[in-house]
Length: 441
Image 1 (cartoon, rainbow, N blue to C red):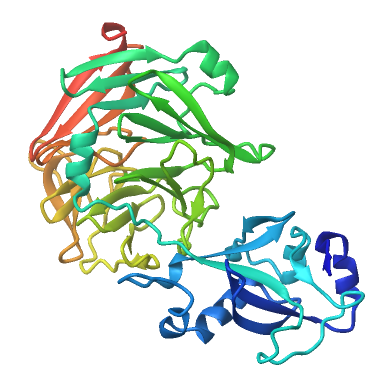
Image 2 (cartoon, rainbow, N blue to C red; image 1 turned 180 degrees about the horizontal axis):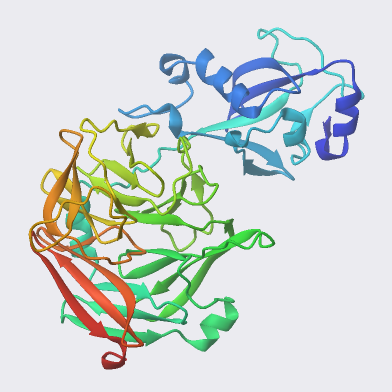
């Protein structure tokens, strides 16, 4: 007999028996593992038990892993009204709380009394959790920079406090200001672009994650702008609320949303016309990071650099192994007063460009010049660069490759009461090109 669990949770809570039988099964209804758990146990504790009791060899009889096995590629589902819904084990909810949201998932005896069982007897009723092996990030390309160079010729930047954007065509080296269509703005309820909004460029599209600080608003919008057709598509109006977050495009089709106020969960989005949802990276950030700078290195690592408080935080994660976030211990205790900077690859280092200087331990030459810092990821040292510092606020902090060892990023600021777009190119020598909005509309 199958019952509506959400209508009977109160009965479960009141029973003397405080254990529930949970079985992990394949999509073909083959039982993999069966055990009893307390109602007060968190779902992530149950998941850990399943992982610990089932090694790679025991799971191979149920799944085809191919050559590379990664425990983080498992996804878990329960049935709700005859449809499978993915279970998020990382929310820390106990079984009873989770059951309140699940229907038609549990077969039970009488008035929801759970009996003891042995794993040899598979006829007993239990809560079914469906297990599926779904390889994550299987569409990574061999060379990230080469892919971006070949797939992208238009680069966009939302215009602050407007519903328009700057568009750069690298083929003809032209910058224009493009107004979004009014029907797109109205239909998708798009607000004027704010400094809290975060964005990244990907394959001639501008992906924008709305920044929301209002406590009364529960969700953020996630949408894109087709830079070729000037068309807005609302992907979802119910992404987790974020602000002071950052985004990075990882070829061929992934966007990582990292950091933000009170946000340790890392979200990922796979670019697909049919995809209206996000995924959650299996590991959380060790701490909340505000406006972190993001960069991919060696076609497998994402480095996260954040200096919003007293000290510089550097973390890295391995996209191939789907690793936890490893905190990098900087080997030389060099004070680093450059904050909210953009990042660009510079041979075996990550160069920090723009941002703010707090006048701490600044090293000036006789002309009073200030310099940027760089992080050498082969030695884990921070050194003062030869690059002169310029105070530029980058919202998209990852410099975009547009040619061999040639990178580009945009910033916007006020000059003589006019909004000015600054294009910063890096090719081993920093070049700044200023373009006025009025000259490019």
